[in-house]
Image 1 (tube, rainbow, N blue to C red):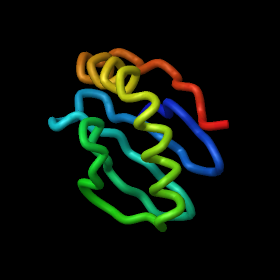
Image 2 (image 1 turned 60 degrees about the horizontal axis):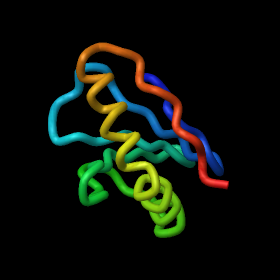
Image 3 (image 1 turned 45 degrees about the vertical axis):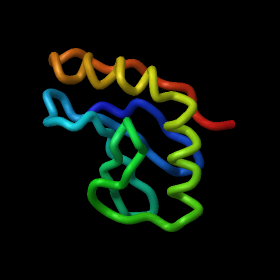
Image 4 (image 1 turned 135 degrees about the vertical axis):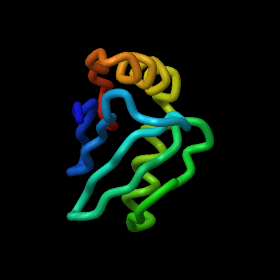
Length: 86
């Protein structure tokens, strides 16, 4: 599962050839979640409000890049790195 971003201890990644809907995986503090790219809904897992707020802020800024990475990963290509929150 390629890592596409890391910020404040949060790791964002995508699986190759994953199933719809478009989503990414986030891990932080021993917890993990699957989050939809469109709508930024938590599909699976749970985070603290603070961590989830940071993840959603980052994802909202990068939705276009996340969709581009989703298409790359769906076709077995390595997704591009995305800039972290600063």
